[in-house]
Amino acid sequence: MQRWREAWQDALYGPDGFYRRDEGPAGHFTTSAHGELGAVLAEVVARLADDSGVCRVVDLACGRGELLAHLHDQRPELELLGVDVVDRPAGLPEAVAWLRSPGGAGLPDGLGGLEALVLAHEWLDVVPCTVAEVDGDGTLREVLVDQSGTESLGDPIDGVELAWADAWWATTTPGERVEIGLSRDIAWRDLLSRSASGLTVAVDYGHTRTTRPARGSLTAYRSGVLTDAVPDGQHDLTAHVAVDSLGADEVVTQRDLLRRLGFTASTPDHAGASTDPLGYVRDLGRSSSIAALTDPDGLGGFSWAMTRHTRGHA
Ligand SMILES: C[S@@+](CC[C@H](N)C(=O)[O-])C[C@H]1O[C@@H](n2cnc3c(N)ncnc32)[C@H](O)[C@@H]1O
Image (cartoon, rainbow, N blue to C red):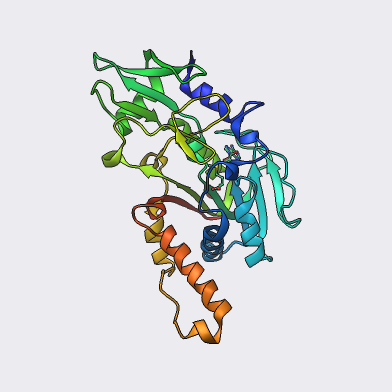
């Protein structure tokens, strides 16, 4: 039996870890960075870079660079850097720079002094955290797991992790679980410390004090199918992020952010179907992507945690 946090780290980022597989995350699930949604997400990211007065975008935890490819297509003048746990993927446009990272909370030494829009899209949910459960006596104990996913309860949570749970996710109800977000808070702060100016953004499914999942949210994906959480290197392992404890300047839903930036899912003028059929189909596709990205019951519920940097202040 191992602590969940350690088993999770090994299962995703160990030598045979899930995220080192050739097919990459896109081989197992689709995110907003992929396909037509990715083209609109790239527009949003470029817009945030422009508004922040920077001409560089760093995509941390970028998978195989899908979003960066969209950005390069749309805005070739932007300086782009992808960071993930594998070597530079074949097929990435040459203009996109690449940095290999350790994985999980670990960031590469070469990342620093950034004057950029730094995006971490679906990173924090795969930064392993301690999983805890309240036992029959009301004590919060660490959850242990073996390679088959069988769990048992370990020692009581104490020290800084107990302080985090008391502050952000307090419960004494037997059977309730707590995913202790301290490792994510520290990872986020580390990422912030790498920037000199610009904007740092983490995008994830999140929860706040009033919306914590009582049984936790740790789950797994394999080949597009939601499965039980098994730390065997064959599955993705993810848990939603306590976005309020990050201490970002602002946390906003994706739906609200896109609306604020003027991305609306309006149907294009039907007259265009005969005068400019290709443009009409393109606008229709863009509009349905915006509808999907702003769906309040789906991707629109993602949280965007954002912190601004002014030169000299991390
Ligand atoms: C859920 S996938 C998201 C990929 C992409 N951002 C997207 O939204 O499609 C999580 C990615 O985070 C990467 N990752 C995890 N920890 C990392 C770290 N410390 N540095 C760089 N990449 C990391 C994984 O290798 C994986 O590619």
